[in-house]
Image 1 (cartoon, helix red, strand yellow):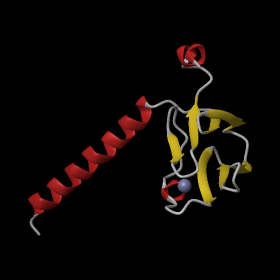
Image 2 (cartoon, protein in one colour):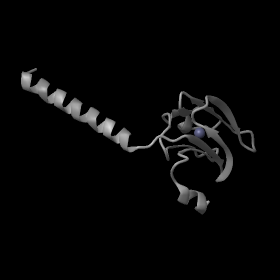
Image 3 (cartoon, helix red, strand yellow):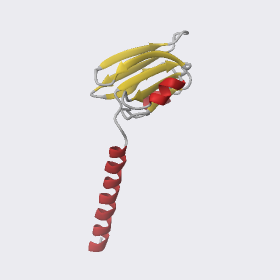
Image 4 (cartoon, helix red, strand yellow):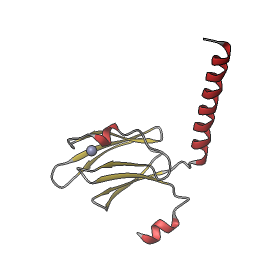
Length: 121
Ligand SMILES: [Zn+2]
């Protein structure tokens, strides 16, 4: 590997890292976890309080939501695809974890934004 190649790789890494940092800075952290089942409000939790919640559906479905260290993630679920379990942790405003089979939507919200959303709903 030539010296120029190494410089190029470092430049790309620095650029990529800078982009990630910039992207994260422009997102705002949420502080609420809003859970809905089939479009109906189920529960709203505090993102800054460590919690484990078993979201139970009417026909025995379940989604195990864990809030830990300011991030929410789906640890277990009864759905066949487990897509929700494999989704990454969420903590930014408007990020979601969706479980289609169970019709469960977990969304991060910030109490400082989205006044309009509240009126629409
Ligand atoms: Zn699922």
